[in-house]
Length: 221
Ligand SMILES: CC(C)(COP(=O)(O)OP(=O)(O)OC[C@H]1O[C@@H](n2cnc3c(N)ncnc32)[C@H](O)[C@@H]1OP(=O)(O)O)[C@@H](O)C(=O)NCCC(=O)NCCS
Image 1 (spheres, rainbow, N blue to C red):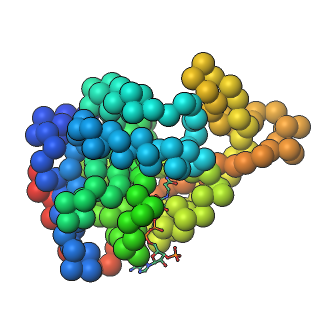
Image 2 (cartoon, helix red, strand yellow):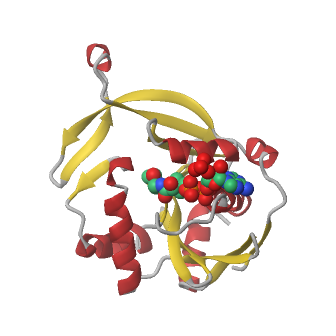
């Protein structure tokens, strides 16, 4: 099944239990994102809390989150978002987007955890299983991604999954109709005064598997 067919199939099943992971005696479940008020409220709150870690910024609102869920995710054949549940509490999200036919790759997209929920190592474990699912079920040759080089927490957990940094790119903040966006600086002169940098990262199945310890999980769909 192709990348797009697989995402479509999962979306057709709706928000059912999709993946189960056992972590420190707890049942962790991933489900396709839903459009309930609770999810919209949580996603808006987390997006606002972590706004400094995103490539774009705008006036964040529940209305915009709801629109993004419908148009940007559920009706977008190139994107999927899963909600992470621990014992029925929604504690975060993880997602995939931007299939590239030339390299048969896609990106590990937004991943975030409710900062009030603490279970050390949980997100590293979820990331590993999720990435394995991307290789196994989306049949990707590699997975790519980017993040701010100052996002140490995220980089730390990526490193535990086997990601490699392939480039560090100077960026600048530019204005958009909606707000602002961080963009690669093209001029060499401006590079000298870059405020921030993006780490461009890449993962092969081989490197992931070197870091894949004994994790109990099942794909349910
Ligand atoms: C990135 C993020 C998901 C990481 O969450 P986290 O709680 O640090 O990750 P983990 O659940 O894997 O826990 C890691 C911690 O547990 C510890 N740990 C304990 N047992 C562990 C185990 N078995 N495996 C891995 N880590 C373990 C680690 O040492 C680490 O501790 P430290 O933070 O003191 O170094 C979270 O910080 C977040 O949501 N950040 C904002 C979102 C964001 O920036 N998104 C990017 C834009 S898309």
